[in-house]
Amino acid sequence: MKKKTIVALYVLMSVMTSACGKTNGSAEETLAEPDYILQEYETSTSDTGDTIINGFYRVENENPKVTLFIPYVENKKSGVFYLDDHSVNKKINSLYKQNELNNTPTGTALQRSSNCNTPFIEACTVPDFARKYYKTGETVPDWNLSDMASYAFVYSAENAGESKSTSKTMITEDVCAFSVAMYEEVYDEIPTMKVSVYGIPKSLFKDKFGKTFGSKEFLNYKDTLKKNNYKSCDLLCTKDINQTGVYYIDYTQLNKKGDYINYIIDYHFENIGEKVYLLTEKSGGYNITNNELFNQWKTEHAEQLINN
Picture 1: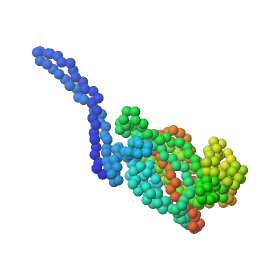
Picture 2: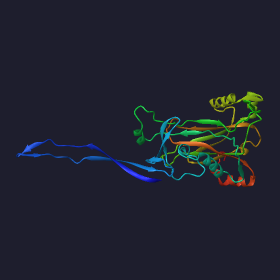
Picture 3: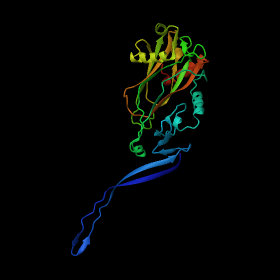
Picture 4: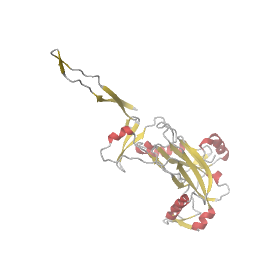
């Protein structure tokens, strides 16, 4: 950061004056010492030229048009996406490519046409000090934390221009990476995110859809499974996440018998509605090229594997 300035605001809480009177023909007036509260606002400019106030980016968002305050993290973890990467970073496409390469496990190759997926969550609130920057009646943006679920893989249309797909056209990859920014710098306690991966049996899809299905009914079916607490699916692995980092799912380990047509990744938070700063995002899809090297990497990075 550069151009750091500190503005001190002095608030006069009480000024006491005594009544004027005359004693022995002379006037006496007493002024008590003022009582001050000191409040400091530290303003600086980042290397990208963006304003930082009290450790928060002040960002003018265009769509929708609101003012956002996003925590400034000076020492970011490699391979992780942060909220300001989308709102402040001027080279987001380059960052995507860089993170995908940084997250590549040993013994795998990055797939540029990646079609693996993870739920995207963006949660943000406005710090108390920043509320003075909003006009009376203006909406103060708060993005609440909420549960989220998504399919692990997408399907391609059987023929170009068609909206229907078949259960045989699922696009798969061996390993998926996703990043989680939990902003430990902001909290005394970090909210826990439970990640669960459910396998959707092939027989279930066959009974539900037959050979072909459209994209809308496919997406709606995910919501139906969620409402039923995934009773028709198999819970394959689960992990509690409470720190910033890059995490992985090894699908080759989950589907050794080829029983599943797809997977659902579910994020669950115990304190729904709690206002926090958090971002989860897919950050790479990979195919295994050397099993021996990959298995060694998995042993060394076991804490990052959901199915560990």
